[in-house]
Length: 192
Length: 192
DNA sequence: AAGTGCACTGGGCGATCGTCCAATTATTAG
DNA sequence: CTAATAATTGGACGATCGCCCAGTGCACTT
Image (cartoon, rainbow over all chains, first blue to last red):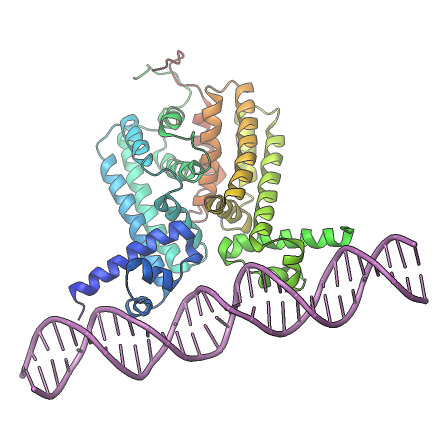
């Protein structure tokens, strides 16, 4: 039987893994530093998980799913422009060189080399894109499906670049990204 | 003295490094597999380069600079819409799960953990963003500086997502991304 | 108190890591 | 052709890797 204490240990291991993936990079996380960060013996990793990689997969997927679902919930019910500002503001909490931002990118890369992780991330991403498309559709944004894809990619791209370009703040990005949410050439009456 | 033959060997080492970074990930490239891929003895790596990481830095930076400069040249003189289609078409040559795409992302991540690499990539990126901004300005796109930043980020983000979303083709992305290049509906661009 | 079983420790296993270096080969200078 | 220098090899070094496992501690039942 699995006790409450062991559940807490697994949680600490997952938390330590999420930190270390971002700090050191996916393939540079070792069982020993992971165990040390979690405050347990080195052998515990392979007691609770079949392999180190399985632990890393679960840790990364957990963080991704949590951030994605939480973002989708926060967006629900807001107008496109308002929601965009809100999402970008939340993005400002991740400076780009923090462990969480790096974890996202590391997970995407690792997914290209691990079939199981790829499936998991694809599921999370598909759900997030669907929620994003619904939100865009409700806001009257044209071509919501394709727009959702591009928007999700662009936000991750900004997260990726932000570590190398401190000027890439939400304030600088928002006015440009806003154009994506507006209908094409035909001049309608201005909002704002 | 450095002979022609040794120059070719260094080139083969750099080429092998660029491949392996994309295939295995930055921190999973070892001196021995690198030397084997380049067809030389394992000791040659540290004969030509002070460390393995120095070789990886130079290899990644070389590819990045080449792609960036080449893209900037191709864009020069084209109209915004036309150039965007051209750039996205060229992007289709990288399916997302190919070594070159992954190399880009790996290099960005590694830059967060290596000060020297960070400086090198920042230079390349700054040059590319400046060229992109000039091109946008010539095309009459509003706020060319910020637009260039967002566009560069978005393209990298699409490259990142493409490995996980085969539907993210140039054809699906272009119509959405095109909106970025268009002025906002209401002519007067007020500032706050 | 003895028994049972999960949680956990710490060290051992062979493999591989980055780096270094003596020895060997290829190239060039005199 | 010989001497000198550059280029290259393959193996050694200690450290670290993922994984495994015999042994210990602890909570709970009987």
